[in-house]
Length: 137
Image 1: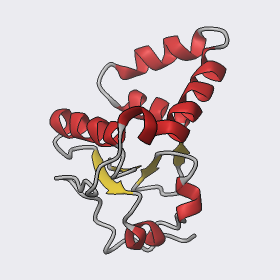
Image 2 (image 1 turned 135 degrees about the vertical axis):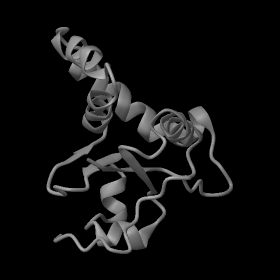
Image 3 (image 1 turned 90 degrees about the horizontal axis):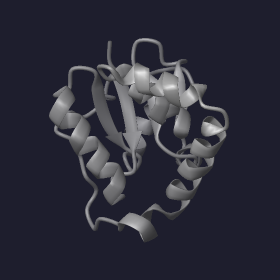
Image 4 (image 1 turned 90 degrees about the vertical axis):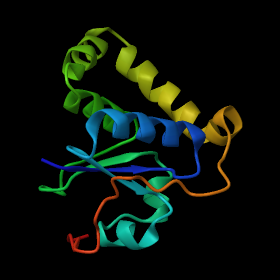
């Protein structure tokens, strides 16, 4: 079971999340593709405009299964050991999903001002191999 995690390779927060995941996962579940890798994104049927809505998580075995934005963050949590307990609790609290979506949007839209922007694109130690990806768009 492998998932492509598409992130902003110039966003300090996004890169920090990827580096944290790399440390724990070691490429077992997640492979990482920066939003700036237009070739890989094109093979996955993702446009730069799609990326404006935030991070994307794709099931590599079933690419029609995609999550974006705060939904991707929640699914990411579900895939981590013990994470589903936290995601379930979060979803069970009245108004938390709505609030979480709004907070995600604010962070997404202001990420460079809040966390800074890298001068170089961060490419993961565990890159998504999209040389062979030819998913239908």
